[in-house]
View 1 (spheres, rainbow, N blue to C red):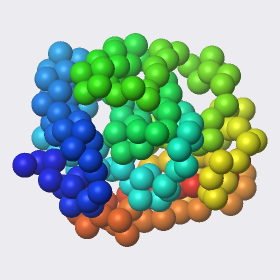
View 2: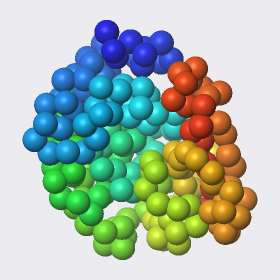
View 3: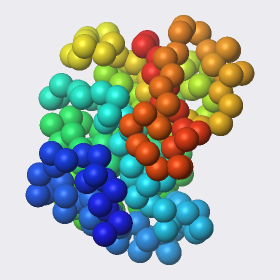
Length: 208
């Protein structure tokens, strides 16, 4: 089963979470045939390249119950939906400027019965709420993202890890890291997962 790659790295999932992760394998290809949210050539790699990649954030942080996440530029629901499955006691707000992508994320969320996810079709400038963490997956350059989401970071600390931005990125990040204010922390995702896909993938954390 393709979903087994998730269960290899996350062994304490309950029956509901297991069923939800398995369901993604049918729902995303079905929706992708109607509305292209994942490249056609990449949909066969859904679990490694999208679901497991999203869950790298779940290896970096174990959030306290009640922690609020904003998924900036979620597309079809990554990393927000896999993280919402993994952390059912936390809340996730998924925002994207492209309405048809939010439609897919919302439909998938409803079909697997997620209760801790909300959705917004719009620009990040329209989102004024506060969150403990903003997460994103290859949305834009880090130095461009930070000024947009700084206003959304809460000053109330619920977790040992200071509130801030957690990004999943790949490739050469040296230029955008140099231009980003503060001191971003970088961790190679290959520390968490052994699949070749993750050899060039990194997690970036910036307290804000």
